[in-house]
Length: 461
Ligand SMILES: [Zn+2]
Image (cartoon, rainbow, N blue to C red):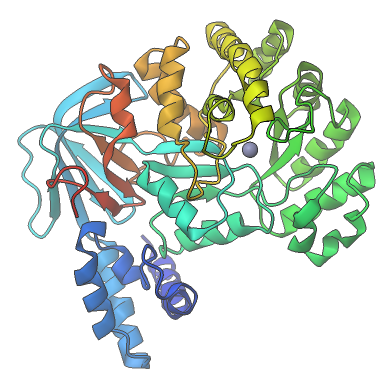
């Protein structure tokens, strides 16, 4: 790494560390300094003790912390003796070691590898190493929610809108190393006719209090999002499924309006994801040039054919529709339960058809990872196997295919030298027992060991 970049990074870290203490102090998950962020979750008491001893607000102490952080950033972590699932070529390498240096995977070594002196070694004892999961449809807006996603094995997420640019803030905290992850692709404010609470996100949105419908209004909202630093735009082709009074089949924006959104986004170098259950609204969005259709419950074969031709991704968020049909979780409403029971078999049909036709399918749990949320991307992986994918195909959906959708396949989505160190460890072979992905034992995100339940097993501290 060039020195200037390292210097910039230390400067940033030293600026952010006290800020993080102010903002996040007392919060159990968020490590108060980047130094502590590099410690393992299971040795948290030790980390806090170390942190206390360094909490002197003096320039010297800060300089010392920065120097230590610089040293620690080069720390070598070896994930030893695991069976590595290669989602790129579909093979498994047995008994390998993954060597992580700083944020990056340095190498993958064959069985019998001797870790270098001073390396931190995590022997996973023949368990299974997979790339960290990618959740391409989330509504994470709190630090707790980010922690829940990370602890479920999700190391990269795409936001599908929040109400106040919390996703942009979370993205920056992860980039700065204050949080181990998940890496965030931010969407900011939903480009939708009624902004509701999101009207408060930026004073420039005041002209949109009466709605977002004309081409000028659509452009303004995309522009404010772009200026606030989002990575992708979220818009809608149809009404919501999750409100009792709306019909998810009803089209909202027409093709001309959706084209305006796609064109304005492209002017800022951004792609567009479109919420759509009904076929008309989805088709309009595909024709307008969106990158992905979210949900896609009632897609026709013709629209799926169009998606396959154009390389438009489908993010079915199937588990969310399952959630509609069940008590508890993100949705708990008798009307939605009945609606969900009608949507579910229809969406299952669409996913099967899309898979058979070769439409690229990525995982999205469509949850805010709130305290009541039951949904995880791992559930979506398991459902995809029930819907006709092989376990390897379902794992690819949750990793490398998701990375491709996000335009991040060169930095994440597989465990390969040179990529970000984003990986998880599970107990059994997910190729034989796909359910094992719901029980994640180790999570490494951007080189930081965020979760380690080895060797104590589940439920222990
Ligand atoms: Zn959503």
